[in-house]
Length: 160
Length: 160
Length: 160
Image 1 (tube, each protein chain N blue to C red):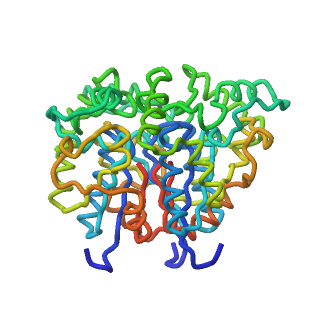
Image 2: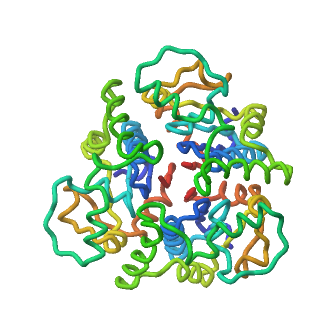
């Protein structure tokens, strides 16, 4: 990434489908706008990076509960508002299709094609018991120091 | 807006009364501080810009449901915490009045008087089926590219 | 604080344990990275600064209700996701201990030791009826103008 490129750094903390959509729409827009873009996934935002199949890994008891209760991948995430016991995401996906917009998994795929750096926060992976095998390919594993090194050079820094 | 003015750009994603209050208090403060200020309303944040009367417009089925379920205007928004089945906003409005602070509709009016640029995100208007006739007057209609053009020049960029 | 120090300014609006953890982890990281760091606590984020004992102060009726319903101090805050009727924070605290990470009260203590400026928003203290006696020692009391003066000089500005 060249030195004089503008930079957008987004922390995705939220595990909500709609907030992750917003994060990836801004990120893809910024990449199209020729920014160097990083999305740093932490806490519930890590779920956007989970593979949707079950990956057999050894875990402790609490880590198993977290793993079972949290959505496995972007497509299974809930809405922050009007989730309507799970109907909300279907409604949103329906209007997304109707208006030829992109779903969250499509936005994530586009981000990878645009070489947006997708980072998984190793500290919260430890806390929630998520392992590298459970996440998508081509993810960067890093901590808060790496985030700060990016952010202090950034024009647009957001916490979502 | 002059080139050398400092700029504050707030994305208002949230449809919560208290979060919208925070956004508008910061925005009005920054305008008083002589910043050029933009609030970019997206997703549930668009509800802060809805007129409180019912505007008859033609809509699809899902768009009608969204329209009915979402609060019509700033005054009807709920709290992010302690909403108490709708009692919370009344409590907040009561203490706002008692302490001579401003309610959300008053803060929005002040923002318009201070020439803060209020933007409605056209992409999420499409998704949620909101139409220009349903929103307040003097709103700017734009997308993520316009946001990024503002944000990359901004000193203070926040996602609320 | 020297003029050429980089600055990180975090608004902590949220009263959730996990979001406050994220705020304090970033803040402590930035301080270790030699940034001048400010956390501006507003709305529910003020609860992170409450002492955990009951402080007898005179309050109005609504302010008493707010005081009773809001968590008294960082250790009593709930999770934004998977709170499981109060079990979630215990699970998180358990995995924090297991992985030798820091709890929220420990992160706040570390922030004070690193001379991170902890600000309480006086306007929302008024609204929620919180008084200085109820908050931790060495807190700075200020409003939105003070936040903006910090933020317009900041490299990393986040709203959490």
